[in-house]
Length: 114
Length: 115
Image 1 (cartoon, rainbow over the protein chains, first blue to last red):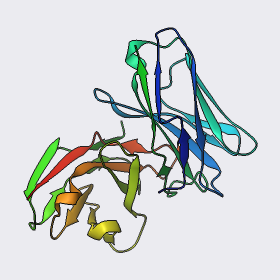
Image 2: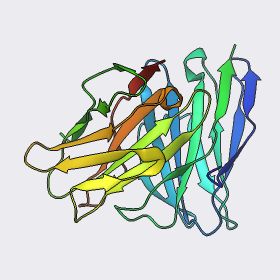
Image 3: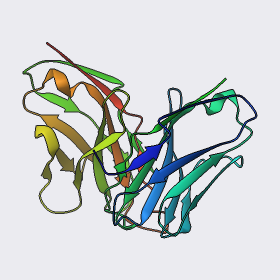
Image 4: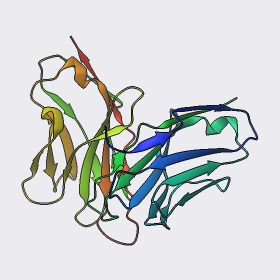
């Protein structure tokens, strides 16, 4: 158990809908990262927050947004969902945002868009 | 462009035999290197990382990795494979320079250990 928690574990929804994925980092970790893992695209970095501020952006669609709250938990919002958004979404956390900091991953949220 | 390559999509090895999962990178400077493992329907678990010092890094579950700067490689190894090592393995590189601190990930290598 990495200490990173994600809810829900599974989410099934319809195209056009909006969902929110939640992540609680390990105690003491200030950085949160979001990733999308699909069979055809592999592991894709979406976005990173550090102590409430956005720090890095990857291949995140405009329909997706995220934030990190004062208690350091983070939410990833996915809107106008499409079939292709079906994937595993992982959250990871690290103590700081240094180059050598290890990222610890949560168990993931499996999103299915029907 | 900076990149990480895991040249083998799948590696098959018999239980008890040594295993190697390959990783090469194309990143300027002195990067930091990581290995993660993903068991079915689970999140990624950190195995080990190279920051500096001894080129042979020891990690969790008996795994080790050898950093080779001249060959820009960071291959994952284990002297004696277990069936329970069957999983997806990811190599990742941190550029250690610039404003972009995000990891560069390989596409993963599926390891199958046969009994």
